[in-house]
Length: 393
Image 1: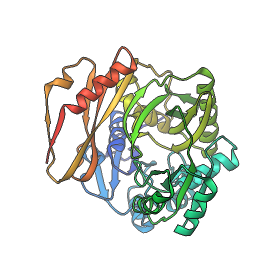
Image 2: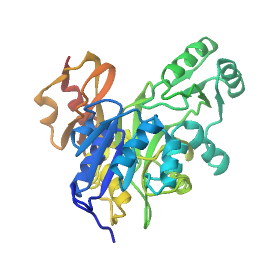
Image 3: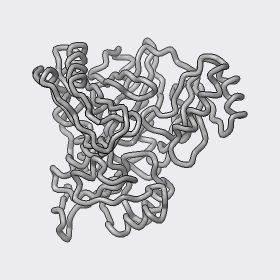
Image 4: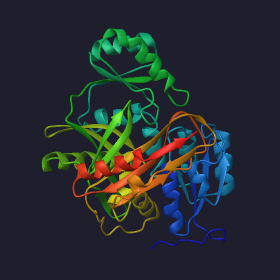
């Protein structure tokens, strides 16, 4: 049995969101639907989730003292991280003092950077991955590339949205790859991972939900990336039963080892029937925004139900669906959007604008969603919607 309080009452059920981006915004909305009191935290003011939360704080989440001050002030029932750039050691301390971290402090700590989760998967659980080495300086980086071989993939151990990721094809690209990885690194880490290149057929995100009553899966999600950041996603990704079952087995194994309840975004490379574990986020995944239209319970609703211990009897898949991101390039603190009728006049289409307060460079500011008779039709419709959105800076 789950007991939920009422916001602002003595016995309210409180959630502290650490990170307030577009994914956190949808999680907050789902908590709000169940009468949960939500406090949103981020490093900058007016972040998307702050706009729908009951109250908010602007702090440096990598500062242990600032993070603890907010937690002890609010005394939340659940601490829900949305991003990697958090003092995860502090979360471990807070968990030891009786606070509940979602899905667990151990999961958040191990997945904060690529080193922890990759070592867990490859070395402890022995699941198939690409070959990999870590480097903390340029000399180690050169040596790692020599051992892994070219072509290889280079990423910061701690980053988001593909920042700092590159494919190195020849020796002339090594220096630039190192500098790009370091510039794209989040936090204080200067370590990078060098991975062997897998000539995969496609890659998927398998949304995996750990609940008190077992492990559930959504239909596999395919996606297209540019510069390491997703541009469009679709559901379902066609794959063989053998490959899908192997992905499910690995996803359940890894998420069970991490512990706790909630939704995990587990990424795989697939070559024929072979499945290679790539990465994992212990929270809703950006490619999973397609579930806002493809399922009766989106990845965000599923995450919230799992956190609160509410039953998930079934996940109703509505049919082939796609998402297409709305990217804005430039610099402005007064972004507006011209929305033509061309895209949204198509049946079974939706639009989400995230409400991010500014852009400096290139930033994901929204997502278009569509259902179709098949995946290709859904992709065409979603891209038509995103192309109909013109930013005014």
